[in-house]
Length: 398
Image 1 (cartoon, one colour):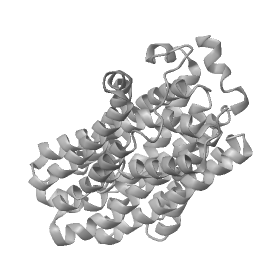
Image 2 (cartoon, one colour; image 1 turned 180 degrees about the horizontal axis):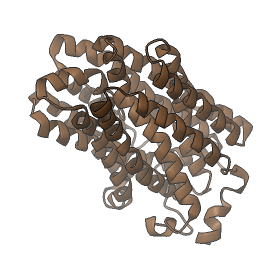
Image 3 (cartoon, one colour; image 1 turned 90 degrees about the vertical axis):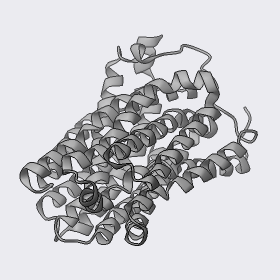
């Protein structure tokens, strides 16, 4: 068996980090700028929630078409196309196209994000092998890092150049991604097609374990999408400035970066993912409860707990999904479908929280509801025994 040398592994990590940095600025920059956008365009909180919900819907639907697109234009072509879609969607904000433009660019960015998130896990599993949790940690940390950068920098750019420029400037990072990804084609391998059984969504939909994984991923991601959309408005609603509220999200996402590196590595060392999963879920529960009961007094502790909990949960959700298949391409197919259903579930959470805000004047009820949901996820995660994971696919797929 050929051993991976350090240089290709380092190149792979750097490439994954660059691509990952592009997967959240289009969404994370919205939250700190909500008040500026609402005043300029005239949107309710329910309508503003669509700017986060629509990309998540697109991320869900895009996961189901990624396989057919990959067959037509190849793995490298899919990633390039996705980065171009993100760059174009971001750049269009400079033209201030109004409500329709905001919704269209949200969808366009969501499609690009979806395609990358659907195809990259298979690439990571093939490139990393047993080190998959480690590389997944770098990948998720980069995603969270992109969110942290955009939530911190966008309010400052908005103050000097307007909210349109604050959203559009992140297209530059996507253009850099296009250039660097084009240079990697001859350096790193692309995922192989599975040599054994190949499955589609209709095959996976017959598996009870598939639905358990999809629901687990979806409800966990619902917490993340709500945090991304409504943490800054939660604090501007308490009288904080946009810059101060944006820093709260940056603080949270910076901690997510650390959690995204530490907890997957810890799960790899322990083998059994369940103790680590339980721990990060309980951290998130604590954060939601504090945010729902004492958001002003416990703001920094609540956001720190959420950063640790959600930052660890996201990569671990993908890791336990890919534990169910040894073949990288098959693991990628499973991860794509789990994400597809999961993101569709998660897309409802920003709209529900926005509706609660419009009806009740605050976000406290939404945060407490998520705390209850995450308690339920603790019970679900106890079923994900890595030592028996692959049996759930073999039993039904042969």
